[in-house]
Amino acid sequence: MTTILSSSMICPTKTAELHYSHCIEVTIVEAPSSPSTSTSSSDYTPSTCIKATRHLAIPQLSDEELWEAWFAYPSKLGMTLHRWAEGNKSALDMFIYNLPSTPPSSLYPLFLTKCRSTLSSLKILVLGSILLIRGVNHGPQMGRTLFGRILGDRYNDLMAFASKFPTGERVRLMENENVIKRSVNEAKGLQTRGNEFFAQGKYEAALEHYGMAIIKLIPWDSASLSPEISNRTGFNDVDQSLMLSIALTSIRIAQTIPGNCKSHLTIPGSRLYRLSKASCDYILHSPLSSNNNDFEGEINLGKEEELALKLNKLAKDIAEISSEESLTPNRSVREVREIFDNSRI
Image 1: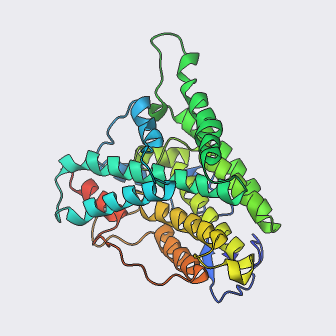
Image 2: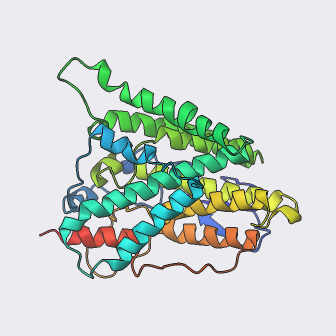
């Protein structure tokens, strides 16, 4: 379902005016229930399953390896979630920048590892930012809430899954589509509820539900799941649309707060901008596979990437941020994923 997003509301059936001189078209109202019935921009067709067989094999991870990136927060003096996420993102950008034009397939596992570290830290930064905006004080309380009460409960819930099977029948999280699909469905329900709050102008409540939906998708990401499993479970559709929803909601809150609080130099403006930026960075650093490609010619910029760039620019304008000087890789994360996929003989 395609919706025109305005500065005042989301309306699934009406086109509203955007008072901030931007008009952005995006599909976030609901994620498709299954790839075969999707009406989103992914245009999934059964024929794409054949193309997916050309992808390099995703390195098989144990449950411990899958969770490792989520508990890798360094205990350093002065370290913050923002610095941690930015450091991982910069390391991935530098890795891509230094890759040869035709990278050897032996670097594929390292590429995915760096992607997982980046996506995990960005997602944790998003959750931490939502907690700050929802009123949890920065400091030890936020850390206990985020890692103990939220991530800890989710970790225990998922890890308990293996203990329900008889000895010798342990099922790993990565290999069980039923667990992934169940989590995706739970996330979609929370996302739908968040969209309802957004339409009512209850933006903080919408953020809270989007955050809870993200937690349902932990610990997976597009760098740990194969394209086939992602398509069959609808994981990537929900994962990406949630981040777009969060970025948009953060921007909407920034538009409604008093003018003297919008700047990134203020605490409210800084928190809202970091939330929008982290959500957009997550989209731009997700190594999605373009199953719709014929693996020939130039790789087109994904619609999610285009929208993330537009939302990031809008967030910068509101926060009064000039162009930032940073290392810009000559290829995007998705382009590198395609290069690795196409290198398979």
